[in-house]
Image 1 (cartoon, one colour):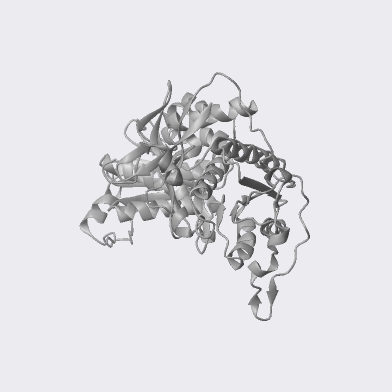
Image 2 (cartoon, rainbow, N blue to C red):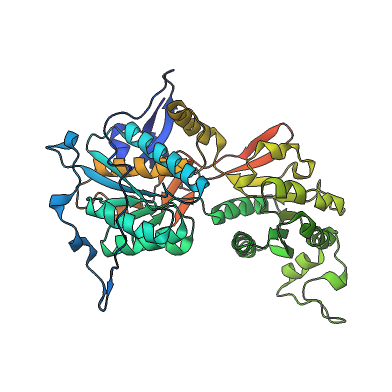
Length: 457
């Protein structure tokens, strides 16, 4: 199996070799044989990371680019006579966390697969080990730049991105990082990741298009819960909806009972006066406008429940247990709901969530498994997309501007392993997500992902 390349235009997806500059994988054809990356396209994957050096002085940052001598840039023997396009890949290969090491290995495999698919003979991927911490990430970034990297892919963790970005910004070198921490974006740092805000925006928009305007929230008392519930409130209010009631809980089964019970009381068609928003004894509930007042006097039509796994399967049944009519109230979730085990939970039946379109992601998963004999973790696809994007930009641009910010942030976007995406000038990412519904027979796409960022597609 080998992926082809297409261009995203205002008219949608268009094929053609001339379109490779602004394109990523979009379709595949099976050869019936297993393919693996071959040839010396990867440079020194086991190279140790040098000790961190300070990059501060009394005047601020050094002119980082002046630290590197072009005569010492990496040029493997098989590239003698050619000028390589050098791309650094920063991942936590030797992290103390075993899961992080496994993900790093899979992302490295996916990046190699992209190099193989790109077929650019002058493209040189230079992997560097961040060790999974900020100090290692800064040292890895400097090491990659010393080897001549024109663009940096990674790191993975937010603190590593912050540290590496100090180095790359000082060297005026762009970075496509894999963190979803929006604070790191901008000034040459692009985040190719899966920010939860995108999922929340998509599922909220879909729910409100189905004439739902009153919502409840049952979220964990964590940083992730804060982020998701905050994004949900912004999306609901911006579209003229109302958060009727919100409850937070500690992520322990026994600690979920009381918050779920309190939230259930607000599912009534008419909310008792003493439970309404802004109630102050004998005074009328405070409301900013008539629509908000009406929203706070009636029960919610849907509940956002951004939990996953075992805790979700313990939490969801509490709503019907406390007399919430789940045939009337829609449960909304997040992309981690894309788990076949959840189809066996009756309380989640009919629940909606936003995620990459599985009909698209399955193609990449098969391509990866054909090459490496295992299913890729979710994050493998972003390493693939970032590497293939870099290869295509490198093949179609002059050295001076092939990785310019306006080339990376093409407004028409790209079509990658997880579908449509684009990197914005402010460093953030947008993705075309599908709406999926949980049913006993499986998880079904009920609203496909868009194929273009242009209106009407």
